[in-house]
Amino acid sequence: MKATASTVEESRTASAAPQAILRRSGFAAAAPLFAADLAAARSLDDAVQIVASHGRRLWTEAVRQAGEVADDRHLYWARLTLSARLRAWRPDFPLEDSDRAALSDRLERASRGHDDLVFPPDDRLLRVIVTGFDPSGLDTDLRRSNPSGAAALTLHGAGFEARGRTAAVRTALFPARWRDLSAGMVERVLGPHYAPGPGAAPADAVITVGQGDSGRFDLAVYYAGWRDGTADNEGVRAPGPVPLPRAEPGAAEPPAWTESSLPRGAVPARAAGRFPVREATQVTEIAPGETAPRTRAGGPVGGSAARAGSAGAGFSNEVAYRNTLLRDASGRDVTAGHVLTPALEVDAADPEALSGPAFERDRADIVAQLRAIIEAALER
Image (cartoon, rainbow, N blue to C red; front, side, top):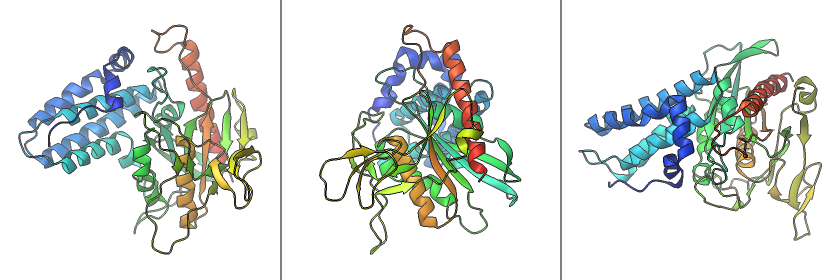
C-alpha cells in the first residue's frame, strides 16, 4: 500500500500552537522515536508490536502527567503526530490497505485507554467507567482543551468509597469524528462491560462526559437517536438518524429516545462547588401528528421523533445514546448517563498564550467537581 495524504486533524499538527503544546509537554520526542522504531520493523508482526507499545506509552504518560497538570492536549496532538508518521510510513515488506488500517486502529485503541479498561478480579469492587472526548472546535482555536478528556486522564485508576464498597475507576477517550462512531467504536469499547464473557465481571456504572457550552454542569437526562449538522474534527457533517450496528433479523426498531439512570435529583446537592449543577430535561422533537420540530422541557412526548436530546444532537448526545442503549439491551441495572461540563476557553485576548492562571484554575476546578459528581452518582 502506498502512503496516503494526512487527514485534516493530522495536518493541523504542523501549526504553531500544537507544536508549542508538544514541546512544553515533552511529547515532541514521541513522533521521531516512533518513526525510528517503525523503520526498523521487518514484518507486520513487528509493526503491530511497535504501534501497540508506542500507543500504550502515550496513554500511560498522559495519565501520569495528569497527576500534576490535567492537560488533555498533550495526548491529542501527540497521537496525531504518530498517526501521521504511520500514514506516511513505507515499509520494506508488503503492506496491504487493510493492514495499515488495522495498525491505525491499534494506535487509536492503545492511546485512548480502550485497552486499559481492565478491573482487578475482586467482586467487592464497584467497577466504574468514565469516558471523555478529544478537544474539538479546533477551526476556531487550536489551543482548545476539553475538560472531559482532562478529567478522564486524571480519574483513570482513581478509587473512593461508595455504597459501602470501593469504587475503582477506569477511563477512556472518544474522538470527535463521526466515522468512528458510525463504525461502532462505542459499542466495541463499552459493550463488553455490559455483557462480559466468562470469568469477567460487568461494570456497575458507565458515565460518559462531554463539554457543554455554558458555565455550569448539566446532568443530561434524555438522549436522541438523531445527529444534527455539527462538523466533526475532520470537517465532516453527517446529519440524520444515529447509524447503529446491524440488528438481528426481526429485531425491533431502535428507540427514538433513551434516558439517564444517574440519581440526578440527589447529585446537585452532593456535588455542590464553584460551578452550578443542574438537571437538563429539554429535548427537541417532532410530536405525533406534527411536522415541525419544537423544543420543550420535561422530556419527550410518547411517539415523538427525536431531533435533539438534553445534551443536544452532537457527539455528547450520540455517545450517551449509544451507551444507554447498550445498558437497556443488557437488561441490567447499571448507573449510566451523561454529564456536560462547563465550557473551557483559553484567553482570546492573547492568541499566543497556551494557558494562564484563569484557564488552569477553571480546568482544575471542573475536574475536581466532576469527580464529586461521579462519587455522588454512585450513591443510589
